[in-house]
Image (tube, rainbow, N blue to C red; front, side, top):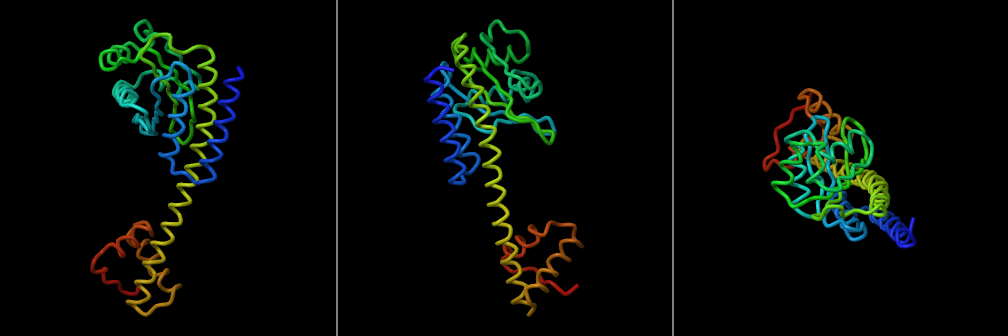
Length: 235
């Protein structure tokens, strides 16, 4: 690895650590990371992250430009392309010249017609729970990516996969705190309306949840969001 790439890797590791320390929201953090990737992976003009869910629907998670979103929409429609190949086959996909690369003929046809993209680098980010993710770099010129670019792109993929996992944990923690707050507010409403203590109020919410087959959080949120809270009776 060149000295320049080593410097970039050090800066990237510091960026990931900073996102973790500050509990950066996932979408914001991923945008910052792929912007950084475009700046440092030589030849790259655009970048994006592709997600293929358990239902096989392909979506764009984040992108630096509309072209990655267009290409993901094409892959969703056709169920083929380099980003999906990277995610499904667990390796790097390098398209040096999309005009000449015929591995995905339908994708090639539509991608050439709808975008000026000619060079693509795709890396697997993760596979788990039926979902697959890929990091992708794009350029309008053919043969835009050198061997150093391919190597550094792989480093970005590894760091982004780690950062995504960390940021998702932060998001889940924030969601859990918000859920706890909503449930606490709902308990307060029930305690005041029905002269119950905290334990009795929570038990009432839990029974309503079980009997209606509705999540406890949804019951609590509906109670708070309703201008005139629903009339509850002891069960």
